Image (tube, rainbow, N blue to C red; front, top):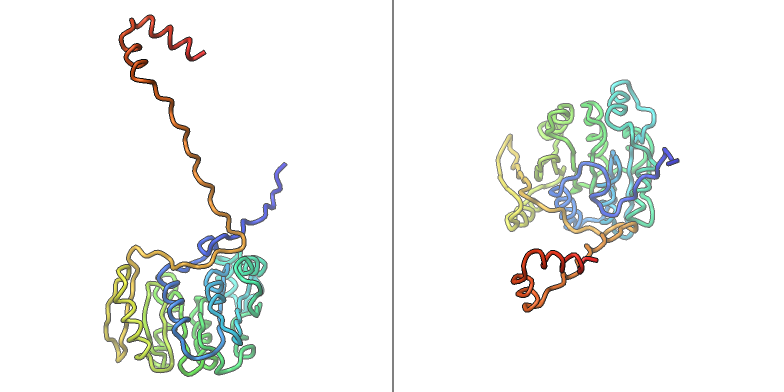
Length: 290
């Protein structure tokens, strides 16, 4: 009898890890992480199954620290957050995240299993170069996450805010644009799903980014001005995810079997069969079949 508690399939490639991390954002994460000249730590608030954390960990430099924070199905701080967690993340466990992450890396990041409201007390101010905020979708939580991250980031550090424009996450939209209009956050670029910004000067990195994007044929690009901000908008056009090292569990697909060549009759035999009466031809074929 089959075991009802089947072992989950281990990921062989990054695309095998469940989650929402489109190819365009994988390209942008990789480009920003590799281009950053300042030294500093990495932080992710909200990890789900680990797809973006796995990519972040791949760009961790010597001497840097990587911290992730998530409830992992633990007790939420309020009723609205509990409802959100039970609806969208009921299957999320710390064990699943760690299993996926260790499929691609030799060691785990620092894992904080708690609400993101604790992060100011866990990560020192002015220490991070790159932060990804992808935790709660509730306005109050996102607003507080943005406030905490502003203190944690280095002056020219980069923050990425997920779901800033999704129809089902209006609280994120309000918190993000409030930060842009009233709290000093300056957009660098917008993808379909994420806003990339800084509390430093966005122009130098924005110019480099524009030069890179204009050379790609798989990115649609537009530049707009709004409320004193230059908004670089990128959208994928049949884009493939960038190359990423395969996990230790990767198994190459088996090669398709090569069909055996069909036996060919000599021209003399074909002519003989064609010229024989049908009744004789059938008899010959029956003998050959036996």
